[in-house]
Length: 42
Image 1 (tube, rainbow, N blue to C red):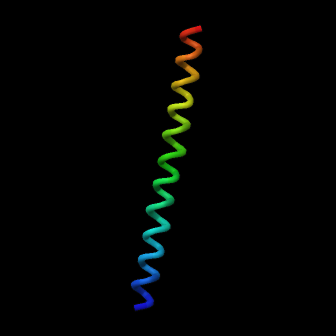
Image 2: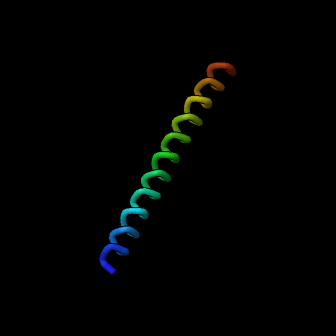
């Protein structure tokens, strides 16, 4: 039973880590595109 709980906690942490990393990565990419677009428009 304990190993199952450990596995669930580990997979939850991994998944949330991937989601956070993906969100930060996307935000940075969008931010860069926004900057490029602003440079283009000015």
